[in-house]
Image (cartoon, rainbow, N blue to C red):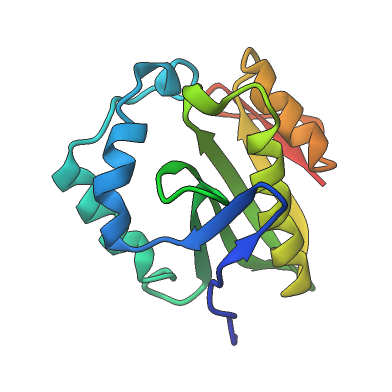
Length: 169
């Protein structure tokens, strides 16, 4: 299957830059905040761990080519400092393309709609490239992320994975 290349996209307040290894230095500080892991688990990555992760993700696809990975670093339009990321794993599902999406925004920038705006920019771009449905997994007590999922038109399902509820379009 022919997959599109990830492209820079923007909204009124935000710029989404395609992920590169060079983003690791700025993102290690963003991802150092322990509040990010309250619902998802895990711990802040070191610079080397993040560099290694970004090198693998920047390839943009699974080894067998069945999945395409779209990863963006989120920045305010008037700043070079990263404030989070959005990502999608896209694969063929029946006749259409489905994207499993995720978002992480620094706690310093939460509460003003940035996660919803960044995720909407991403899903709009993905729709323009042929994605027909979206899935996200959200911890049932992470009310801010539940709001982001709802803002993307996703609805809660009875399915769960690793303690997170599946939301889908």
